[in-house]
Length: 328
Image (cartoon, rainbow, N blue to C red):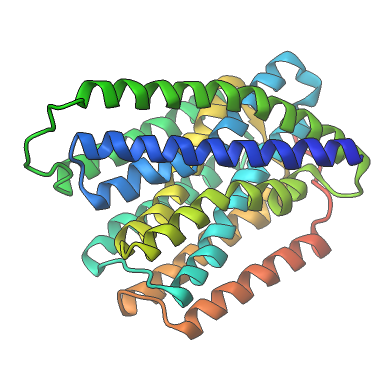
């Protein structure tokens, strides 16, 4: 058991460090092509900080293809990690950012940004009502994400109208792309070890695969969003900070689960269908109401969201300690 914990801990540290490397180089590419700060937050940074969740889905789905008997365990682990990470960001990290900084979302953008977050969660929930997400549904989730990006590209003035740098521009782009590619290769190998160790650990512990994903992997894979948001606040980029968290909560369910489902399909335990996803949807509506009143979270609202997260984890552990039987 100690070996599995060490593999997961060391593996997650490596993944987080490589994610930071990818994010830095992605920002350089975005700035080279003169993308605006809002777009960088909602897409480049949110996609970059979602790399741990996405890589986990890819590797987990490949594991399912190699070992079909692990379908239920790996599916619960992958989706639990994804939803757990989203809920942690949504009602724990975001309020923390609101207390120490500012969660700045203009009302005119609120319907699109938080609305897309809620819509993504509802779409995934509808697909899971059959206790599975098949390849067609995975494809639809990916298309929905691409449609979201196209909408942003069309309506948010994403390009700054300045001339691109000529000096050493191509060299910087090649180096950045090379580092990103190398990081992905290393992360795929490390993530494979983390997934295998997680599967073994779930068999040893008296908790379900989905709950392990929610409280361990889900929180760990949300650390890039937390660190990147804190850095953006420190640099005074409040809009980017909010964009990272909201964008990540759109990227994770649509692109992460979408890619995984497209590769192998997933089975989904009842605990996720009837507890975790409804919690994500309801708390997203609460977040929307708080931000609609004013463009920022008050300290009282932030604390209430954090208490909701603690109540969620406690209730999940008490009332849904095991994954319910999955109907195939």
